[in-house]
Picture 1 (spheres, rainbow, N blue to C red):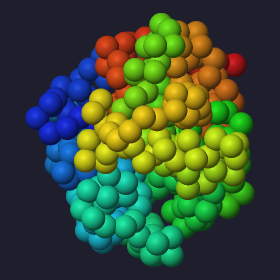
Picture 2 (cartoon, helix red, strand yellow):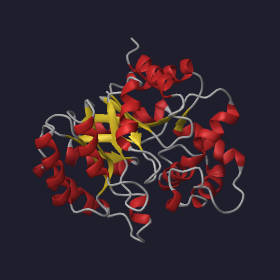
Picture 3 (cartoon, rainbow, N blue to C red):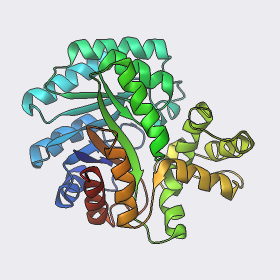
Picture 4 (tube, rainbow, N blue to C red):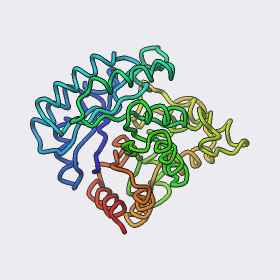
Length: 309
């Protein structure tokens, strides 16, 4: 199953219309970003999308447990699932722009694990419940506690494969999805422009776990500069880069680690490598420049790659 993550600032686009665009491009549904100062409320918009479209699956991604109590989250998901059984997705996480923009720190891993246990107890099995995870400790803990993981480990098949294997080692029957930043591009300049809105947040993941992501020691300070130049108040927009000069080689390294670019054949080839890992579904990042412009091409390339023998 392939979903588009809708991450458009409030007032820029109607999530129901974007869901229709995604379905027309051959995708199965949409996921809706959670960051109250940036985006429309993802739970309210989930109800609108499921009521107004035939989407096979829709729901919040990633719902911030740094802002929302797990019992309240479970109640909302139960309610949505009662109205739209079998069509509700709920991806939870420790929080990124949602907590940073409120001056809060993400919950500790221990507190997060407790929240996951509460959710697993209260959310019905008919709703698809996943926990977003990037680094090894969170991947293992999420798989063990929740039984469903949205792996956000970038675009390198070797590192993604390592993450998927870790999730399955923590719990053999875990449901594994991938969050992937991918866009069809014609040249390097187009790839750089498309990736620009997300490079800072991707770099932050590399900074938190440089060994896990195989970041060369000499490049780590430069990758940190990419992360520090990201303004989370403008997260997912073309204006997210602020601050001083950032080394071009660091930008390129982050892009290659986290963003799938190229023509449809190149994109399909990369997704064939992901499909070989046996993942259950993919959420495509919607914040990349050009994704909506060439969503038909992207959807076909992703589907072709995932279904390739």
